Length: 246
Length: 129
Image (tube, rainbow over all chains, first blue to last red; front, top):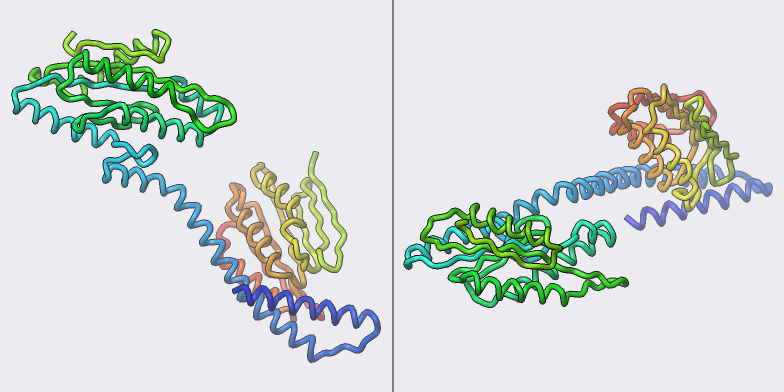
């Protein structure tokens, strides 16, 4: 391919040289000129096809990028992982939580705590520092929450946007509050690599219920979300607990 | 104010005339500039903005005798942008070549294969080149 472009340069430079010689009174070398033009025609025709193909290929790449997100979404669903943060996704949470509740019910019940966590002023971080910083913020907060949970059966999932859900099995209000405070502290310590210091905090809402009551996951999430709303209203960077049944 | 541009031809670059008011663009001569993309940069920028407007009609007369492959890329972009523009039905391209200039004639035919919306006329003149 590069040979073609190189040969094109050679032909053009030979032709130019010959034209300059003609201008200076040299006789026309008809044979040379025709030979150059013929080869130029063949090369240009090849190059035009190559240019058209590479142009189409680059357009396909652009389309791929556009539609790539849909494929990532599908892949995330299949993998049960959130590709951006590397933690579980909402589908995993729903699937796994049903399993946890059933197992707990079979073994005689127990307390289940669900936490909703939301990054404070995330939209402003995104708008002020750009999406790359926003994405990094999501990643490190996800890691900080994950690092605050130590038991094997407990997990954190990205619920959507800048919201995370933490599920703590066999954990009562007191146990959940210890974890919530740990998460608040660990997030406060975070530092996004950026020229300006970016302060990150989260707000947490939590609820606890006995799985014997046969409440649905949606009810746990809804109640935790109500508690989260109170934390936001109370000035953020805080934790609120609401009992599931009240 | 309507855009107007007129560039005299050189050994390496073509004569260019753009008259936005009349909806008219002309390339004439030869195009061998090594940095042809930079030569056409301003023209491309204007054209991209113009193609988004509600113009009445636009005619592009392309009468290049010879050009290099970088010019092929520039022309391909120009023709494709015209073909994909919202007012593409109002655009006419006249690809003007000489009777003996098979290279440029074939080049025009090749471009025309991919154009679906604009009117593309291949005009072969009775010239000696």
